[in-house]
Image (tube, rainbow, N blue to C red; front, side, top):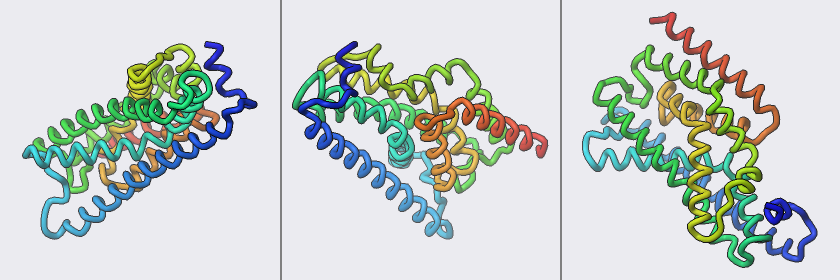
Length: 264
């Protein structure tokens, strides 16, 4: 435990190497996020251009279409979640470099990130199944937004109520305090890095899954909506004042859902 706490202390002869590793990690994460957003922008643009000729949604009625939808969700989750996970990823790299496995920080970081993304990929599979079910029930518009006001209202209220639950608070607390997570759940070795990535990803899904349902409210490929949710997740997980942000979002979401219900 002490060796993990000491990893954040300056004054080590390996500081130059740590800075180099940090720059490489930041550069790699930035590249993945930027490429993911570029993919989303190109897909959204392609949907707009194809609107006159065909359904803009990759209808998941075949294995190929299901795979394309699954890929879309997986890339979207990477674009949305990696920015707010960056502090934990960079801290993990510092811990490995300074205390655990000198000279092998970047491979360990890659395994940690892989574990994190595996969990969100599993979530993407569940989201793809949900989208498929909504499509078959004719409950999605061409913009991949719910065609049912009642379902949209339910998604808003569910996300708002979940913001107030103890599970949300516990998961958000872990996401906001990655050092405590590493102190209490540290595991050495290759499998340890992957497992910690899986566990941190599970906490992140526990924190944010209800917010992801909101993508079906304004449209899965509505990039303004996607960017707003991404920004909110980052603010809630990284910046000060998380409790006020969480409570304010809860009130706004519940109120919006109730307003929608009055229009039915």
